[in-house]
Image 1 (cartoon, rainbow, N blue to C red):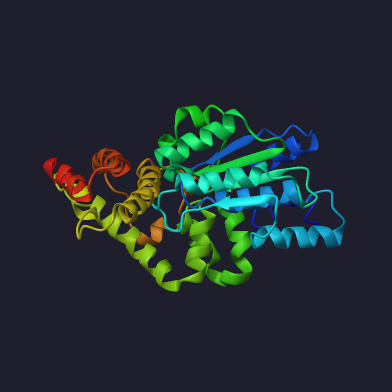
Image 2: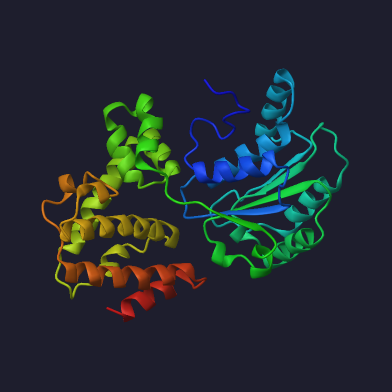
Length: 325
């Protein structure tokens, strides 16, 4: 079994490219002062950032010291580690939180580590003042500090911030890797959970812990496929918006729609099932949707998703949707 030093990202690491990238940087002692880990939600970016912080802070220590160091980072008591994290998905990160982070980074090292590390999760939630405060830190970073920004919406982050960080893109994890990791806990449901997660480890863990969520996602896939079978004149987003759910919930559904559309296109084109994100699609829909319906659904998705990315009032978002019916 590999040690923490050899396999620092843990058994649940789904991103070997990012792991190799940082291993090379660590080995060559060429760490940048700031990174932006970005990619769609549910990929495990924050878990990776946390593992990376522990690797940076706790490496090159004796076994017992390393264990204490890792535990201190986990419980947020390590003097060389600072975490800024929204309590909810859309909660703003204030300038006061960034100022507190800067004060910690400017303190003298007390924990025996060469580096001090700060992780800012959901960095797209920075207020304007907080973003400006981060920018000042990046322009004149304290000595031996590393800031790791994490975001699923990097387009909302100031270009001047992004230009001062090393961008690390996270992609979907391999379905086989997710299935293997959850097999001991999921049993015979590991395959379908890994498929429904569509490359998102965080989603797989959520489905594993909540049978109701698994049933809901299966029902959602069936519902989306049913909508695709409707006449082209019936707008897909009209049905998806029914009930006026929160934009975050609707955006999650549109992400699932992407994978449904992908698999239906593969099926409609008669390509091999090995290209399917969800190999269980055949259990949900006996026949592929027509290409014309898929094209219309894709157009609806693009329009709907752009609306959800704006800061518009929720009712205005729906009003714009209905104007396009």
